[in-house]
Length: 272
Image 1 (cartoon, rainbow, N blue to C red):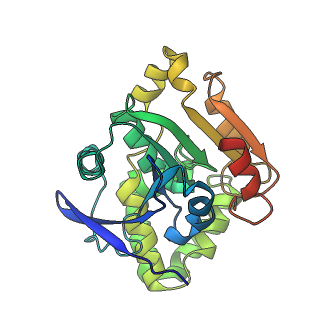
Image 2 (spheres, helix red, strand yellow):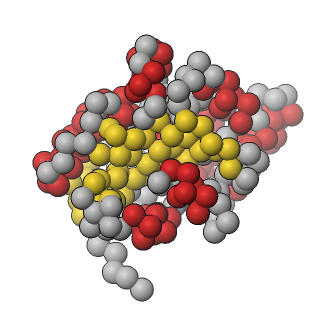
């Protein structure tokens, strides 16, 4: 067992924790997915230990982070965090890697500091497009009310979820994710807080507009998705990416979990 050391930086209205792995001359800033922790990047850290130093950032309401309810990640947090990393570790260029919903923060960093980012590695990324369910729950007053009701009275909303699914207002993957990650009041509250903290982040229209005129910059983005992913809709993902012909896209023989022992070595070979 290795000792896990966390570091922290005060960023505006909160404190953000991160982990340092490896001792390579290049830097890779990493974001895991909802409900995970820094250990999902252990295999990556071992693989890259001589070429990269990994800075693995805890998501809001995850790991050592103790954000207050109502916290929202903004471009100010993005800029302050990257400015701190550059000053503390004395680098000007770096790479980004993000899995699932962690991609929303990575995309925000890429948009704000695009010239400094050497590569943006996106694994089964959430945020390339927004599902109707996610937009309803996080960007609509009624959705927020229903989410609050669900935290305290889950049985009331479970029926509504099944009804929305019946009328195809939410897809089956969103329904499954919602039902399997909300077994306790604590988990329901964390899901609500986290979704609302990153709901404005993602593949923004300004970033899309810029990339459409910058094919060379598109080549910085390497995206891998699971062919059988029940969470990220492959049809919507590929439709959104269609105008960006220079983005590198890799299909993987898996579902949403790209870290399984059979698939992750493929990612390491394809991406590094």
